[in-house]
Amino acid sequence: MNSLIPLHLIQKILVNESSFFNYVDDETSRRMWWGALEVIQKEFLIDHFHNGGLWVAAPLPALNDKRYLKKFNGWLWAPEGFTYFKHEKSKCLPYNQSQNSNEKFEYFNNYKILDLNREDGFDPFLMIITPTFQCILAISGEKDKKNLIMRNDKNSLKKVIELIDLRLSQENTEESKSFQDKLGSLGEFTFNEEFSNYFWPSLSIKLARLIPNITSQIAFEENSNKTLQISEAKLLEAISHEVRTPLSTIRTLISSTLKKYKMDETIRSRLIEIDNECTEQIDRFGLIFNAAELVKNESSPSLKLTGINLGEILMKLSPNWINQLKRRGIILKIDIPDELPEVLSNSEKLELMLSGLIDKNTRGLKEGSILTLELRPAGQKLKLQLIVHSKEVNTKDNHKLDSSDVGPVLNWNPQTGSLQLSQSATQKLLASLGGRLTRRKDSGLIVFFPIAGIN
Image (cartoon, rainbow, N blue to C red; front, side, top):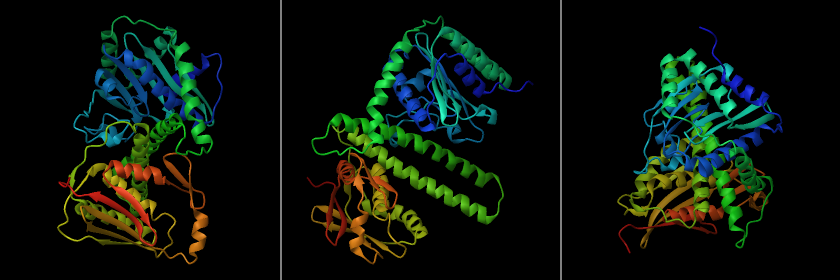
């Protein structure tokens, strides 16, 4: 068999056939990629998916809207051994992973996963074809000298389709036949070569709205422009999604390695430590995503709150917290009485929020510090209290470590390098979960939750 046509070659051909490009660094190219995906899916593809279509992507599914994944057939080249997307209920990569438990959310697995080879590279690629809309999107180039490519002309589409089909025929003849059949079922194409005249201005507008919010610190006061806050929230959603995806990939590869190979216990322990760190970061950015979503959709209806046993949730999560803090030399003590009434909240998002509170209130603590978590009745509410006994010697110096908000969602501490939810975002997120956050001098952090069944 001849060597496989690498996807990197397809991207390079698209670059070579273009007359002019401005090079950008890796980070900027990724921002452009996510902006382009949002422009295509929300502003253009929304009017052209009803009659079905197909897509081809690498190294991850670029589409994140379940409507398109339901209507389209797809082929994904993913890293070899990347079994996450081969799981029965992991074929659809939702933009908001916190929605997975929603009964209205459906998973679709109508795309084929093929192995990405080393020669293919890891620059993203996406081709979308419907009877009335066709588009090829890719990033190509050397490190920090990248191009974002968008082609929708007939010649480029024809050439890329031929190369994709050749790659499929070399790799899997059945998939090549399926690709040809699905392509033929779409009938005659209506080419809209004017699409590029609308795409690039739309992308420019989107980037112009979003990028300044992470390149400069903006003082958001009560009368700050709401449009800027929503723009930052959208960008944080995209960044959170982009951060969690490779971390999930790392966790999957670690899990596969631990199960598949025999290894020295020292190496095994190290891999488990890496897995734990990935999990913590996934949770942190999941919480940031939820807060950004709340800021962006502040006028939307509140979460549905139901009766939950807060004590049981805390006891379930505490072993993981104890292990996390133990690695940093911090002791966690739990004080929860039996037979407490249920509170009104949302269990899934509350678990993430509680982990975020533990993390937020222990960042920067010295080894030997103690965190006590108490849950007590307080009238018609339950009082959750986090009390920190720090080993800090000079408490006055702590004020010099005060962090500052860099927007409506995030707070940055330059001394510790800690990026956390801002106080305002924490209060809003807890309020959406039924909680009321207060801070009392010498009493630590306190959250009150309403008892279920009490009006």
